[in-house]
Amino acid sequence: MKEYDCIVIGSGQAGTPLAKKLAMAGKKTLLVEKRFIGGTCVNDGCTPTKTMVASARVAYLAGKCNEMGVTIKGYKVDMRQVKKHKDDIVLKSRNGGQAAVEKTPNLDLVFGDATFINKKTISVTPNKKGQVLEFKAPLIFINTGAKTIIPDGIDGLNEIDYLTSTSILDLEKVPEHLLVIGGNYIGLEFGQMFRRFGSKVTILERSGRLLTREDEDVSAEMTRILQEEDIAIHTNAKATKFKTKGKGKIVATVDVGGKAQKIKCSHVLIAIGRTPQTDTLGLDKTGVKMDEKGNIKVNDKLETNVKGIYALGDVKGGPAFTHISYNDYTIVYRNLIEKQNLNVNDRPVPYCMFTDPELGRVGITEALAKEQGLNYKVATLPMAHVARAIETGDTRGMMKAVVDPESKKILGATVIGTEGGEIMSVLQMAMEGGITYDRIRYCVFAHPTYSESLNNLFMSLED
Image 1 (cartoon, rainbow, N blue to C red):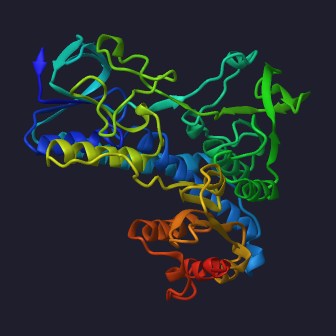
Image 2 (cartoon, rainbow, N blue to C red):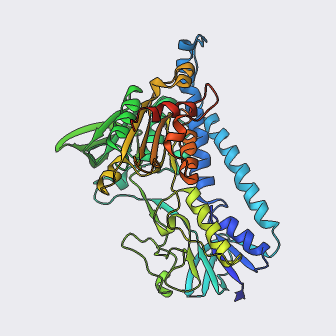
Image 3 (spheres, helix red, strand yellow):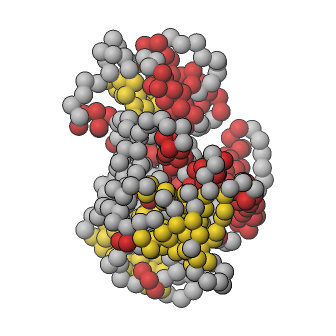
């Protein structure tokens, strides 16, 4: 038994900086990681996928360049090189993160699976051969993240070599036909990416439309964009059966609007959502409460019902974003070490979906404003009316803002377009600083920029 002041389980975007800062504040700290430093973001999420999205965009632009007066006689996608480029960037980030942890005084790093023995004690089964270790601390922080949900009840699913958002990153050949199960953020990013690499792509979505958390007009615009790239989209659809027909040949039986049909494909990506990694933590030994989905319940300061045990990032449910996980760390650290009184209430939850063009969103949607009975107005502007978009040759997408006509405050914004996340961030800063839409309407922006068209967006509102 070895005792510490703090134990951090999981080295994601909350766990790693928290462990380092606790150690630097004089706390004897242990960081336990079962796999790789950096968590999902560095190893399976943001870093590798956005690197591959960038490669896919280059392929897309190569196919469009003749329209811009630059002639390319032909190009090909080298999937091995795409993977190598991605792997090199991931390894640099992962190794840099591990080196930073290892050189931090007062901080120990152990690789292995952590399981609670009681409220203040964990056992760790090392990844390499060795005896099970036991550690004890008055403060324990859980940052174990989430993993892909594999659906039950689909006949033959376990008989095919299906892909997840992790395993698809290791492909060295472009799939002939990729069938994507799930029409939300992960599924759409991968679907468009592999279409641009050369795959035929079909997306199945159980709901009546894609992106059900977004407004219907936003969903419709993104659907149109994807369909223009010859991506087949089936809504009100679910896979009911899979059967292999030889190497690289899968036949999926699909229910589309109550009618059965067969889809022949070479690969299947499961992208219906993610579930918290709590099943092996032994939380039953601690009394820590979870919800019906396995998410760890926390209060507004991210502490569980057991004093001294905290949960940060995706494992606690809620917005599953890297930046939220990182913000969780800053709140916990500042409360414990700097004796502040911070909480997660009312913090902004901006996010992006990195299709091309990307979708950036912050605040409420029009649908939520209506549901809450708010007095609101909506401003919209097609990217086809944005000078910068016209000049760069990509007018796909739209800007949309929900505002309070009395206070003139911006309640929410969604942008689909090139640099959509950056445009959204400008509006987020306005929301954070209390800058009203009537001021943005006449603000002097540099010309020609994407953000300049926020003038025109709010010109569409009549006071």
